[in-house]
Image (tube, rainbow, N blue to C red; front, side, top):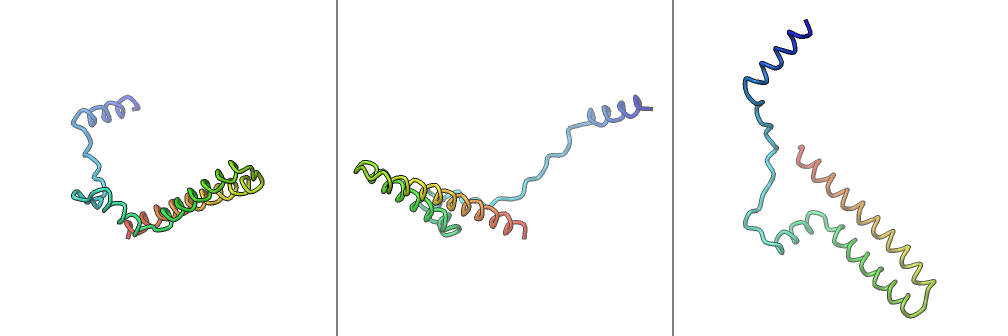
Length: 105
């Protein structure tokens, strides 16, 4: 009966907690400082820091154009910033996918 099955499940649960799930071993670098980690991550996916640099450069140039009163160029730079941000985000996702694919092999 349904009550008997429920009782069996309850008794099985009362016997003890389920075994813990074993996470996949992650590579750790305990002695690694900020600079070392930044360089390692940059070598793994160089497009992300390059995209960030490009985004910030376009943003600063757009702000300078805005302050000078060149609104047409400022608008163009803000649109370019959005495109640069999108490319940076795509590079970030691509790097994460490549890392996940590499770890499965």
